Structures are given as C-alpha cells and as structure tokens.
Image 1 (cartoon, rainbow, N blue to C red):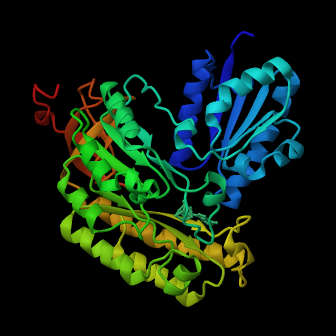
Image 2: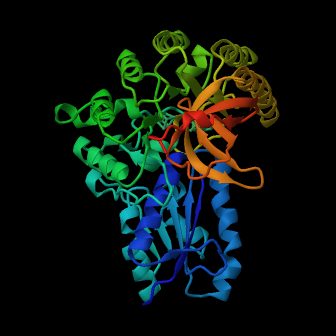
Image 3: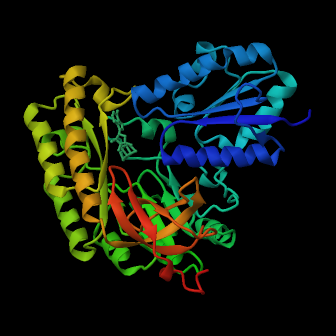
Length: 451
Ligand code: 5AD
Ligand code: SF4
C-alpha cells in the first residue's frame, strides 16, 4: 500500500509533545508525510492527556470533528495515543466507533506496524500493555529539524509516587530510568545535529537511576556527563519532585556551567495538612528550606511551580496558606489548576469535595496575585542586559527575533541582523510584559567568532 499523509494533534505536557515528535519520526520512517490539513489526512493521531478532567474530555470532542472526515474517506485510520488511551484501553473502541487503534504510553514503537496492518486488513486494535524493559519502550532520538536549537531528551518514564490526586502512575507505569550510556549517546547525536539546549524529561527527574539500583548512575552523575559534551550550551530538566531535589542537585546546578539557573519545583499547596493528604512526602518548611538553600547558592535562579486549588478538604485557611506561600516565595511563574477527581486515584474517595464556584474563585485569586508578581519581576528587568539563546530569526514587519534567557524567560527582540538562530546574544530589555520580555539586540555582543 502506498504511504500517505498523517495529521497529529497533541494535548498535555512536554512529555506528550516529545512523544508526538517520536510518533512523527516513526510515521516518517514508513514514508508518511506530515499534513496540517486534517480533512485530507490518511492517518489521524490524537495524542491525549488524562491529567485533569478537562484534558480528558478533549479527546471526545476531537473525535467528533473527524466523523465527517471518515465519511469522506472510509480508509482513514484514527489513532488515539497517550494517557487517555492507556486509561480506557479497549473500552475506547466501544465508546467511539471512529477509533481504529488505541495506542498506550509504552507501545509507541508499535505505531508504524499497527498503522500498516489496519490499512491492509481494516482491523481495530488495542495495544496498551506496559513493558518492563525500558529499552523496548520505543524511546528514540528524533532527528532535529532545520534551525532547531532546543530538544527534549527523555531520561526516565513513569512515576512511582502515587500522589493521591494524580493519574500518572496508572497511565505511565512505574518509574523506569533509561541506561546512562543510551542517554549520552542520544545527547551526543543531538548535539552533532545542531542542538544547543537539551531539556531532560521525566516525571521525577531527580530520582533518575534510583530504580536501577547499584547498576545505575544518579541524576548528578548524569548531569556531569552531559555538562562535558562539547558544543552543548545549555541543560535544563523537568520535573523535580521536592522530596528528591536536594543539596547535591543544588550544588550540581551551581557548579556546572551548562546547567541553567531555573528550577520547576511543584509545591501544589501551602498547607501542611493538604500536603499530607496529597501524599506529597514533604512539609511546607522542608520545601522552604530547599528554596532557601537554592537561593543561597544560586541567587539569580528562577523558580516556578504548580499549584492545585480546591483539593478535597481544603479550607479557607488552607487556601490562605497557599496564597501566603506564593507571596513569600515569589515564584517567577506558576501553573495553577482546579483540582479534578481522577479515576483510580486515592483522592477519588476522599470526602469534602470543594464546590466548583469556590475552586473558580480561589483559582482567580491565585492568578491575580501571581500576575502581579510575574509582572513585577519582568518590570524589574527593564534596562538590564540578558543573554539569549536565539531560537527564531527575525521575522514580521518589525524584524522580531526570539529566544530564552538561561532562567527560561522568553525574549522577543528587534534585530537588524538575520541568521542568528543558535547563537547566544546579548539583549537590552526595553519592556517587561506579562508573559515575556521585549528587547533590542546589542550588536556589539556579536563578535566575529560567534557569527
Ligand atoms: N487535578 C488538578 N491538577 C492536577 N495535577 C495533577 N493531577 C491533578 C488533578 N487531579 C497538576 C499538578 C501537577 C501538574 C502537572 O498537574 O499540579 O504538578
Ligand atoms: Fe503525579 Fe505526583 Fe508522580 Fe508528579 S510526582 S507525576 S504529581 S504522582
């Protein structure tokens, strides 16, 4: 059968974005080409997220959109991948007659063979087994595109923490680290293909290697090996769990030149009793000590976090504790969510669910406070000079290029010079906006060597 085109739609986190990159590479390995026109595609892949109720519902409305496409093209293959696929398994085939392939989170590597089988035999397939062998999880490097500067690199998958609200341990399985040599090989390959910045991905990256026991290296050893790669300029990692983020990681961040001064450290709540019922395994004061140690050793580091409001049993006082935590720590940026009940999680059976109206109101208060804090940070950067790794060349009428600082702030800047992608340049900040910074290229920072 002749290959055709595929269309891919992605919901959720960076892990999902990277899984979609891998699925694209796999489709291209069987000569399918990407199309942005969903109506003419031969294969549609919906890569789903189940972390919150809202994310889960998106898959059903997305499927609805493809009803007409299927009528126009009975040979269309519809794949549902990701966490909803893993959660629903064969039930998804019953819930929607449009779905041809349910592809679980450990079965990505099977995509090309399954698509070809469905096109040949018009069968409906569920592939959702968990694999114990991390090497067979289908995690492969994705060839960087032209002018691509930053890349993800998965170092581990799954999570064994079982926070009481979270579905991830059920949809992605237990924590499994990739072998160090495999990660280093992929990192070298990315750098030799033009990548300057690597973001290490995992649900709990600071626990890297713990599941490998004495056979494995730890997270700091991994950072050290990556920090030695010539040509690599920046290393980031996400997500850190506060229980595993310790002095060793802080020392590594402070001493290794390529490791960026940014930590995403989800606190979830500022109330000890809520943290306990969330099963987060740290107290507020333990969390604060880690922030203090980080700010002591890396004074300019940016800190970001995740917050859940309206967890079962969250009283007005618990919520005020979260607000005062945000006020005290003054995060650079936060991601905040209304609690939503998830199937199979411990919190599913917890009493005292908070009403939707109260959750909405609390979330609005969190947004209002954080917007003020982020804006103040950005304003305070006006007239300063920052170092930017350029990700996009100047475009548009005003010639705006863009990139990020080591602290992960987006900077859009005017530049009369083109061909900047991949260079590290100095930018004078003209204006601090709500979500980004606007600046002007300091041309004198472009010495001949960097051009
Ligand atoms: N409800 C709301 N937010 C959730 N998160 C995870 N599970 C839930 C849930 N059931 C949030 C957490 C996590 C982020 C990725 O999503 O804040 O850190
Ligand atoms: Fe979910 Fe907790 Fe694991 Fe993060 S650490 S993925 S919140 S169970």
